[in-house]
Structure formats: structure tokens, C-alpha cells
Amino acid sequence: MPETIPLINLPEPDAKPVPTVHYVPAYDGKKVYTRKTQGFFQRLRQYASLPLLLAFFLLPWLSIDGRPAVYFDMDELKFHVLWGIFWPQDSILLASILIMAAFSLLALTVWVGRVWCGFSCPQTLWTLMFIWIEDKCEGDRNQRIKLDKAPWSHQKLIKKFSKHSLWLLLSSFTALTFVAYFYNIHTLLDDIFSLSVSVSGLVWIALFALMTYLNAGWLREQVCKHMCPYSRFQSAMYDDNTLLVAYDAGRGEGRGPRKPGTLYREQGLGDCIDCNWCVQVCPADIDIRDGLQAECINCGLCIDACDSVMEKMGYKNGLIKFSSVNGEPSALKRFFKPKMLAYCVVLLTMLMTFTYSITDRIPLQVDVIRDRGAHMFRDRNGYIENVYLVKLNNMMDHADTVTLTVQGDQPYKIRGSKLIYLEAGEIFTVALRLVLKKEHLRSSNDVVFIRAQSSASPEVAAEQKTVFMGPVVK
Image 1 (tube, helix red, strand yellow):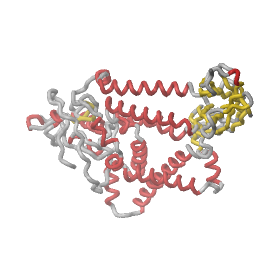
Image 2 (cartoon, rainbow, N blue to C red):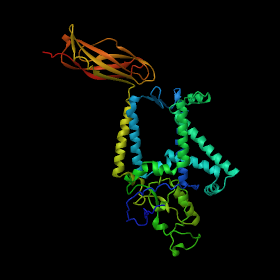
Image 3 (cartoon, rainbow, N blue to C red):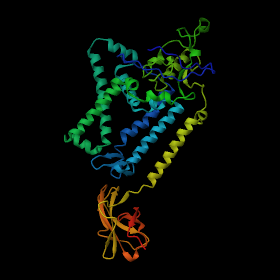
Image 4 (tube, one colour):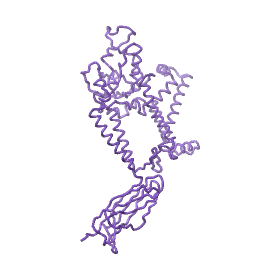
């Protein structure tokens, strides 16, 4: 463990050390054996993870209008999200969701620290499940250490085989569920059982199963330490009021063992009995008593472990707790600060814009541009003619016939077909000729609107403004 300076000394409110994140040491190859603990934050992790895991595993099985609730159809480039259907042309909406998610993460970090990592991150949730399986198959922390040191035996082989089999089973189910978001789950299962699944489908399932097995079973804290970029820029978002897991050095030092009921203060000891339980329960294998570190995911398990020890010793809880450099400001005080308010204003603006875009979204788009290969206009047999390229985009989930019309101050007419048949999701470009009798021409540069209207759904219509050009009117 690298030498570091304790971050917070809570009994000295005038001291405001800068929240410095210490550098992560190189991987030393040491296996981390986590101790099982119970407490408020452990239960909170379980309650927070349950709906997220249920949503991940159940969404491909839930059906809406005869298809999965969330399904990304890569063959037809059609994305089903609950009751909405989106196309590649809606990629700006996906980008908006990702940007809002990023700002939400930034705002949440400023307010309550890295609670995303400790309670909602997929790496954390799957590691939690894998550790639970490990505990059921091999026993608690001390039993696992003894088992690994013991020579190979029939009992050890059964325990190791059971653990890795269940790990692989969970990894395979996870991979199957993930692929089901892109490959209809019912079709996928039928193809697997009939041995007709494609090679690419098998490769993706095997790849995701292997990565899940390695990440949650073997790498675990190494992903947070050396692969996740979030821990590298977290300190840029922290301020003096950000909540983080802190050790009360003024109360806990000096450390040392003692018996319950002894006058330990007279021996120069603090409340910390140096049992190392806070280290043993930490999934990132850090010592929170060394101060804020990049590996800390604010899961609070060290708080549960320390509080249980304090209760056994008859001491007050809170030797390790969620606090900040400025002590424990209220939630409202931490919320109403310039940085937090700025994040919220930006996030609210993006959310309102996104909501408006979704509610005002028309599943039919029309784009009109003048044909660059033609003259500005043609004068033929007493008619002025303009040529346009009209691009139609049917974003509905069914085929439709679109009717093209023109609106303007003069009696413009369309030459050629006005009815365009479009398949579901089809993008079609058609040349449009717009004519006007010469005697009706009132301007050399008149504004017109090309309108496209659905035949199946008359309320679905889109229009595009363009210009009708002609000779100078004298």
C-alpha cells in the first residue's frame, strides 16, 4: 500500500485539505479476498441493483406490439424502444441521450460523489453477483484463503469446479441476454436449439460470455484501478462539499488493539482498533484510512464493517462515514451551489429540448433541394419550370403511399407522379418538376412549400420551404 496522507480530520473544522486523489500503484498480482459484511449500505446496494438487473434481463423477453420491448434490429436498421420506433436518421436523439447521461453523472458526482460506481455500475453489480457465488461455493474469506493454500483434493476440486461452472453459467446467460437486444430472443433460442444459429451470433455470445467471466470473476478491482477512466477525472469534479467516504483520523488515531471496556485513551489510543475489517470488505482492496484514493468507489462497505466493530466495542458509530472536507453539509446546501446549479440548468435545458423533439417528432421527413444539374429555370411553351430533388424518409413501421403537393401564392402545378410508394424505413429520392404559367409569375424569386402527406395516416405530414425562380418581372 503506497504511503499517503490522511485526507480528512473531522474534529478540526478549520482545516480544509484539498481533495487529492492519490496515484494508483502498479498491479502486484495479489488476489483480493473480500470479507462478507452486513449493514445499511450493503442492503442499499442490493436494493439499488435489483431493479437494474431485472430491467437488463427481462426487457428482451417483454413484448410490445409483438416484438421485444427493447430491440435493435440491425438487419433493417430499425430500433424499437418501448412504444417508439427509431431509425438511423434519429441518431441525434441517441447522441442527446448520451450527453444527458454524461451531464447527469457529472452532477451526481459533484453532489454525492461516486455513488454510480458503488451502487449502479455494471462492473460493480456483476462483481457483487460473482462474489456471492464464490461465497456460497467456497465459504467466507478465511475459508477461501485456506482453500487456496491447501493442496488439491477431491473436495477442493468440487468447490472450484462448482464456482467456475456457475460463473460460466451466469456469464453465458448475461451474454445471451445482451445479444438478445440485437437478435430477437425467441428467434435466437430457436436457432440455438435447432443448431442453426449463425457463426457471428455464436462468436458474439462467446465473446461477451468470456469478457463477463474475466471482468467479474478475475479482474474485478483491476478494472476500476487500471481500465476505468472515470476514476482518473473524478477529482476534477470534487469540491469541498462533495460527499465521500472519509475516515475520522482525529478520533481514530492512534490505532491499536485493546480489550473492550479498557481505558484506551490513557494508553494514547484512538477509537480505531486496527482490525483491518475496512480493508478486508473493500472490493477495491484499499485502506480508506490512507485518505481519498482513485480506486475508492464510495460503496460504503467499509462504513458497515467499521460500525459493526464499533458496536461490539461499545464505541460510537461513524469512525468511517460519508462526509466532506467541510464536514457534513445538508443535501440542500450541497445542491444549491454554483457548479451544481450550472449542471442542473444545462441538464434541464437538454431534457426539455429532447422531450420536445420526441413529442414533436414526425415519422415522415421531406428534404427539398434544387437540382444542381439543371438551369435555374426553363421557359417552355409559356410555362416557367423549376426542377427539384425531393428526398422522402418513411420512419414508420409500415409501408405507405405519400402524396406530394405544392403550396404558394400562385397556381403552381406538379408535372409527373404525385404519389410515391415507400417501404417501411425507406429513403427515396425523386425528381420533381414544378411549373407555373408565365402570365401568373409575379416575382423572380418566390417562396413555395413542398408538402408530403401520408395516405395511411393523414395527420402525418411534413413540408419543406424552397424557392421558385423565374425571369425578372418588368
